Image (cartoon, rainbow, N blue to C red; front, side):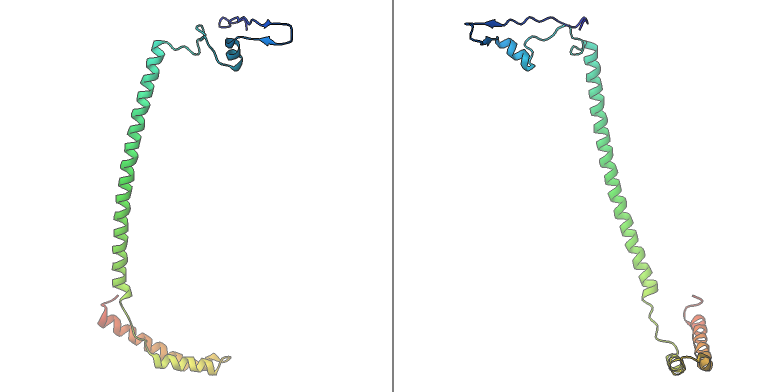
Length: 159
């Protein structure tokens, strides 16, 4: 309103035969629906200069190049991640296998089992007077200590 881009439109309404029917042209119907038959030439918002068109094309091209670059980069990183995952999975499986070979394969038979049974029997016989079992406990701990010393000096060399 009042701006340089405002245009004045004429609407012609014809009344015929006096029966209350108003006839309007097809152009008026289109304009009422929001369709424009004649583009507004002076409207700057819809008009782009040649420089703006070139800038927009250049910007679009740069955006496409960046998108292609980052898609390629993402694909490369996903491939590297997959390789790294496979490598670490293999290394982990190998480490688990080494640990199992070192520690889980060693089986030992019960040590001083007869003396252990005597300690348990004494505890069951004297549940409220466990000090009465001190002789059996001493014999059991001495047996275990001897076994450890023999194992360290003979079998594993200090492990």
